[in-house]
Image 1 (cartoon, one colour):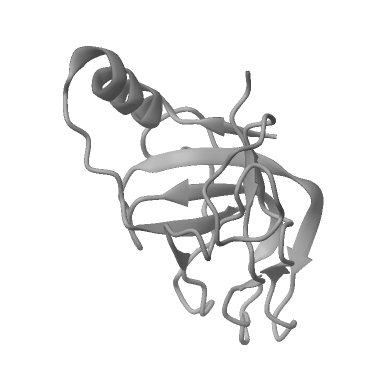
Image 2 (cartoon, rainbow, N blue to C red; image 1 turned 30 degrees about the vertical axis):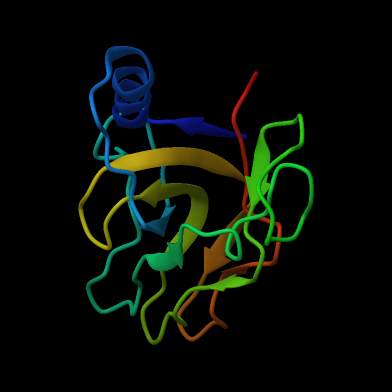
Length: 151
């Protein structure tokens, strides 16, 4: 299950109820964490290090073709479902780790920037993934990164 950060909650409240314009990102950046993320704007927790690891956040466009509609597990059409859930349409494959281990990935977060930026969504993985040196590139299969807006 995923949750919105305080930053995103505030932006949505201001946009919907207070007529304060929020420019939604055109690209989202998926980040991996080895310790718990939190509601804070910066994400808290420990993101995989970029020093000598070949790790980088994965960029994914905000589009009908990249994210499933709430009524289907494929892209291409506007949402019309009732469960408030979307997921990645295609496989999300990070860089391979190279000669430095990433550790045990336990959480993910979605940011509005490739580095730093504002955390928008975060959640715990269903199954932890240990990424050792020279392992295959970690990935989320199509429809595996599921985001639900609770109702």
